[in-house]
View 1 (cartoon, helix red, strand yellow):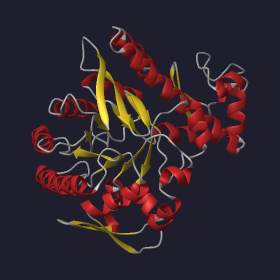
View 2 (view 1 turned 135 degrees about the horizontal axis):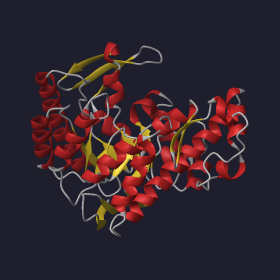
View 3 (view 1 turned 90 degrees about the vertical axis):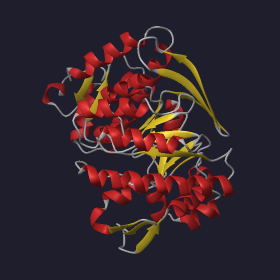
Length: 372
């Protein structure tokens, strides 16, 4: 994997770049749709291709639970299994394990957890999660890390940082010794909760290892927005300029803009698809709740400035009707539109960086989403 910066904004740390993998190039900043269990909810792979995404994300924990490593190995990896030939990034599953606080036990060598499906016991270690991702065939793999809950006392956050760094070191050595490092890149994850000193320490210690990329974990998990912005800036200032930087679990346009201004290149989140299934849609004027009564006889397009299939063919009244009627088509159309929005939102940002237009682009979107 290679990464190069193609342009920079003169007033902020925003940059556009190109991430080159064996399965194709990805222009950044980029939003990755989440195909947790090898599918984006309510959409098909054909839709993802049609919208034009260059990379998607799947989850190691969920794929390990179902369909299981054996099935994926027989299938020849996730790309063949789901008939997707573009790059795939896989989360290590660490966040899912740690969110199952009542179902897991934490050790220095890994984390033991009970399946949320059948209660069976399993152990994730820095090596086993890489072994699973090897079978998956991920183009970009993530290390196992300790994502502390928020809020958390500083001493507990420090313990999570120590464990994260130790696991990253074991993961790095294991990856370098036994993987095709050109085809499967490995990213480290910076933790530290909302403690700036811990984030600086974690980032600096991880940067002593030559990971192909670095991620920011444990943010946008309930902390105040000002702390999110502060911790993002503190962390990004300590990460290498020549490596891709990935903000994990962020899908709000406003939070994405904040992170891009700090120099983040990659994003993922279930938010755009989840809120779509609940009737909330991203538009050029901010959020729109299609369930609202005022759209009952509104025959205008969902977003007159959007050129997606949904906006070109259906009115707000129709979309409201099928949502209230419980039609599956409502979930499909809403999800399609929100992901189309995210793709074009990121494309516009890419184009504006380096041309001098990024500050105005950021102002436009902040105005739209601050009033919605």
